[in-house]
Image (tube, rainbow, N blue to C red; front, side, top):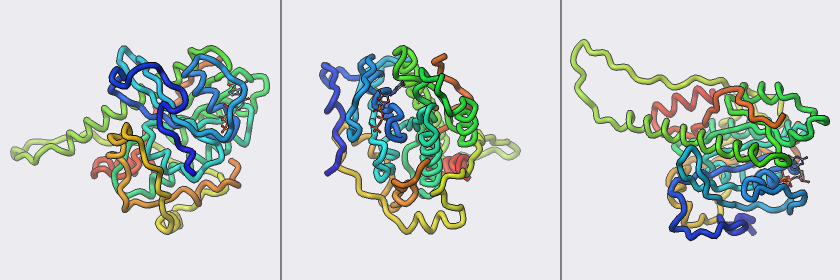
Length: 317
Ligand SMILES: Nc1nc2c(ncn2[C@@H]2O[C@H](COP(=O)(O)OP(=O)(O)OP(=O)(O)O)[C@@H](O)[C@H]2O)c(=O)[nH]1
């Protein structure tokens, strides 16, 4: 039985849907068990810190918010730390993925690296267009600085290596830190959407006659680094494509009507690939501030067009 529940099934606001903001941002939290994914979500939704959650709960919540004077409906999928099989589904649904670890737990950091590797490999394997993802590496439990085992610079270095955003925060302290986290996420998604719109408008321009001797210039895709890591399940570039092409994406559960718009951006059936073999359950992968170490980068999961392809290949070459 699917543990997916439609949005607003758990924590509801008392607004009619008619009054909800039109702009929607879908955020998924991934990470090892007990890193505080649910605590962060509940803090954002209720401003409260709760010590006990059902660890087997996966649910999606929504909260109308205002970011930079603009209304937005933030939908958050709180995942269950052990269910790696659903990763492709999460990636399809999400506008932003917060890969969470605890600054006090080495293996949670390793798991975060595993997720980064897996998402990178997954993105490389796709060949048709889908949504763009904003990726953020997120170190939680910053209030436990005294027992920190993952230095902040390690998180920053990994984020730089994967060209994703980085942030440290805590669910156990001031609400502002968690609010800043989600607001920043919304901003990054907006930036990415603007970039995609700008890029699409270039792609869709009808051919024009270029006067002789004129020079046409086009924006070049931003460059970015990529990486491999020492995560056990990482597969080499040589074997990657053959492995990925041999496996298929599990069919996701039916989506609620509100996701229909989103699904139009999803992967087409011919791009079937699975993360199952990449994220095996046996794979193992620490002053409250948010820290931007590198400009947040998005992942183009697939090739929407030739220009997208080049951006994509620069991110995940
Ligand atoms: N000190 C401290 N404890 C936290 C923080 N965030 C979560 N916790 C605690 O860590 C434990 C696990 O938190 P959860 O939110 O259930 O972790 P999770 O990542 O959702 O775990 P799964 O649902 O099993 O994947 C709980 O006891 C929380 O109270 C934090 O920022 N600081």
